[in-house]
Length: 355
Image (cartoon, rainbow, N blue to C red; front, side):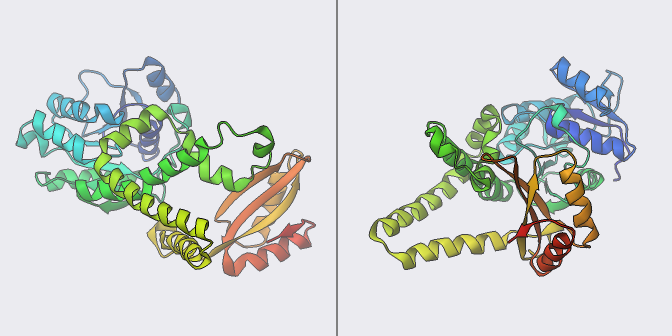
């Protein structure tokens, strides 16, 4: 089954509006549903689609609502139309159980869960973009009764949105996201929480490292309390593993056991190397080239233009403002083997760099 539209998106927040924009980019008709008049008006104004009318007959319904509402909303979408229904929630087992309890097996065959591994600490339709899912993994989560044609249609949606399909079962999915998404978020929250009451003189020393670690902690707490609660069993398992490692780290620091400390630190390095590279391929060793910049209009445009002239692909960019002066550092992340080429090229154009 090929996705030809119309596609109905229920929930015009960050994910829902981004999916709608990606479908519109592909030339598909998109119908929007949301209990928030403001979100609906905003998403429509962004060109994400038009409000659904009672007579509309979507081919696919995408449910993009908070976790607590998933089961009920999916079942309602299945009951009011003959469309294939998917959702983009962070948890799959609990919503599936609720759906199977609400509809008959023939109806539930049209349901296939999914979960794009993309998002932002920002929320709402104004944070949406058609490119949010480009090159990102998108889990397609069939259940035992899923119609194979429905599975194909949901996989087609992921590909239309530019994502890379990964097929998983519901419990397998929930264990995976507990480790790769929910635990990192909670770790960021704990670190950020230690900063709340810190003295101003301590916070003045904040560098890019603390910003990198705590960035996702700024996400909506109301959404994340639903996510963690709905996936509590898998989250508790990985939190228990971290508690054991934290106890070992505490003992090592207290006793001055540098070998144990080095082993913990080395395990962290090995973990970062285990993360897949772009498009799911092998991780490529990267390093950073730091460039001093002034706080003046046009300086970043000039830097990026000069970096482009080097012929080196920039994998990531971070900007660290120096609170003590009118300037800062731009961190250009590149393949390790190309760093010297980039640095030499930039220095030949007058930039001050260091590793």
